[in-house]
Each structure stands twice: as C-alpha cells, then as structure tokens.
Image (cartoon, rainbow, N blue to C red; front, side, top):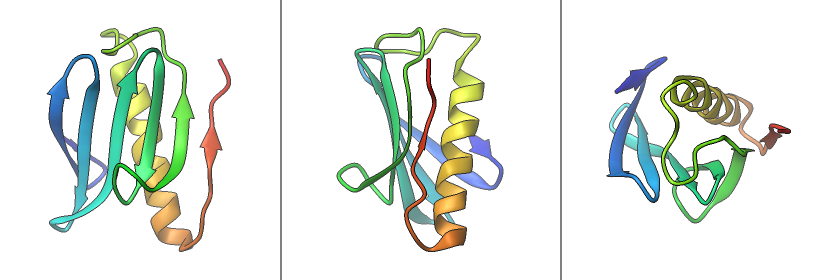
Amino acid sequence: MNINGYELEMTCGACPEQYDVFKDDKQVGYLRLRHGYFYASYPDCSNEVVYDAEPKGDGIFEDDERDGYLLNAINAIDERIKRGHPAPITEDT
C-alpha cells in the first residue's frame, strides 16, 4: 500500500494489525494497533512515538477507520522527517 509516497508493508493482519513504513527503500516508521491503541513510531518499532490514537478497532481496524488513521500516522511521520526533531501528535477520542 502506498500513502503519499510512503510504502506500507503489512507485517501482521490482526491482533495486532501492524505495518513497516518505508521511504526511498529506507524504513522510516512502524505502525501498530493492539488492544484499541494505535501508534506510529519513527523510525522503527522501539523508537519515538510521533502519533497515537484510540480507534474503535481492538486488534484490527474497522473498515471505516483504517484509511484515516493510516493517513494521520503517515502525515505525522512525514512531519517528523521534515522538521528533523520530535513533533508528537496525539488524537483525543
């Protein structure tokens, strides 16, 4: 899947739903939804959280929410890359 020039590679489809994010063949992010908590970290799974939210889905997004949350996560990673410093974004439920 490609969102705004970022390639998302699904590494697990459910419980958790998770993705590695690449730009120009370099990993720049990790996305994970588990137990109703979704987050995007930069540049990989154990680093800086740049976006988090609490979607309706528990271990997998509901069909009507996936696109929006993935876009928000990619936008946060993109902002982090452009700014060159932390810019955490949290979405209230």
